[in-house]
Image (cartoon, rainbow, N blue to C red; front, top):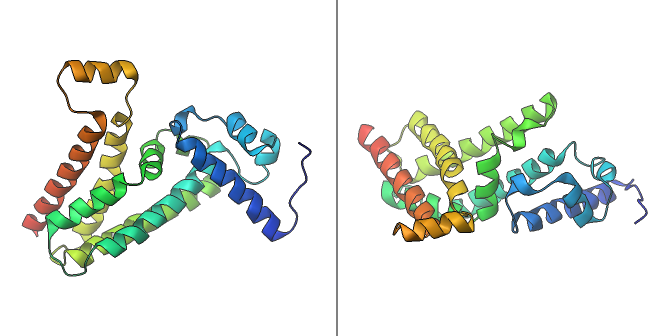
Length: 214
C-alpha cells in the first residue's frame, strides 16, 4: 500500500482513529504484551515508520486507548452511582461490576506500569500520569458523592486501590490451557469467576473498612 501522508487536521485525526481502532480490535484477541508494533502496522496497512508519524511508540498507542477506555468507564459509572446513597457495599459492587464489563480497560490497566510505561518519552509520560491522576480523581469524586461519609483522602485512597487490585487480578482472568486444566483438577472456580469475586469482595471490604474508620 502506498503511503499518503495525512496533511489536514481531519485527515490526521482519521488516521489516528484508524490506528486506535485496530489496536482495540487486537486487544480483543490477545494480551497487550503479545501485540507488536509490526503486527499492529500490518493490521492498519501501513509501515511501522508511517504509524510512528502519528504516535511516538507502540506503547503510546495503547496508552491513548487506555485514556479513552478509562473516561468511557467513568461516564458509565457516573450513571450507575446515586449521589448520597451512603451504601459502601453497593458502591464498591458497582465499581467492580462496571469495570469488569470493560475487559479492554482491565487489560490495559494491568499492563500500564509493567509494559506500557516502559518506552515513552518524559514529555509524554507527564501527559500519561496527569491523565491517570485526573481519572483517579474523578473516580474518587464519584465514590465520595455516593458515600458522603468518606473524606477526600479516603476516597482518593480507594480510587488508587481500584487500580492496584485490577492490575493485580486481571492477569489471572485468561490463563493458558495448561493452567486452566490444573485449576479444574484442583477443584478451583473458573478463572473469570475467581477474578470477579476477588475484585468485588476486595473492593467491598476495602470501602466498608474506610467507611468504618471514617
